[in-house]
Length: 370
View 1: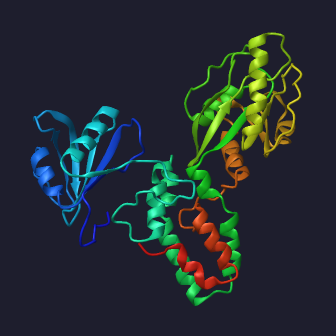
View 2 (view 1 turned 60 degrees about the horizontal axis):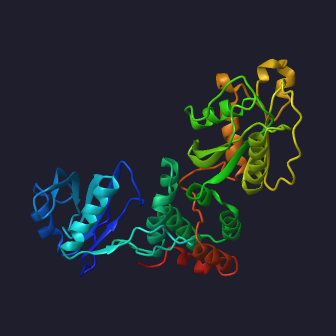
View 3 (view 1 turned 30 degrees about the horizontal axis):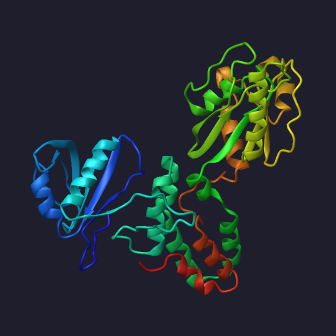
């Protein structure tokens, strides 16, 4: 935890966690009013760098929530950890506002990643960009990669000052690396194929829990189901779709039409087939992104025939799922999730990197000053 070091700290309250309901929300208060506010409205005495559990109360003494408070080392900032129900969050923020703290809305970061309301303890522009993007990190690995960026960039800048021979190649690699952008803005992966080939069973394996209803009858999935899946640390919006086949039933025909539109908007399509697929597949139209060919129910084939396919799987037994996960990450350009690598995820960083190809001395601008 970095200490607030400015001589004068504004009296502010901001929400560090993403807006909306959650298990836990973190409300930060900063400024000279922190100590009297906690003394008046928190049931226990706080100490710097200690987690203290007690009751957060309003002016009437009514308990808003049992909270966990962490006071920063200099006593001019505190993180109030409350349960993440909307009423609790709103009540905690409103209480602080009534006692002199100015609220900084917890808006999503703008597309270029620049913080609209950067935290007071951000030491550099890069730190601010990291803080602004933190609510977008959907997986532990995504958060690890993001939080490692200040050190990763500091190491690269230091290396560039002593040996710039391989710097252009390193910059080019960073420019084409969209890993962190994918970690913060999940891509769409669409499972597509004939009816009854096991797409829903594959989806359940990738979700690591049962989210789609499976059955041996074609047409069980009647509409696409989209939800966030953690693919070995990479978040993706995974869509399980109804089986593609010619049908005279209006509902099923409409579902197939929706699948076509979903394919056109997806980042990656996994085409799922099976040896026992019986129904002809309708024309899909142009496919814009990469395609992974999955042969499910591969246990129905001789071993040599199964191995001849790009990705043989047996979804009901979990066979081939690790390979499928790896292929998804590679096809999305995220085969390497090493946190120590410097990554680019904002327009500001991209523009500096493009200039650094001709003038390596400007690379230090990536870090910037607070």
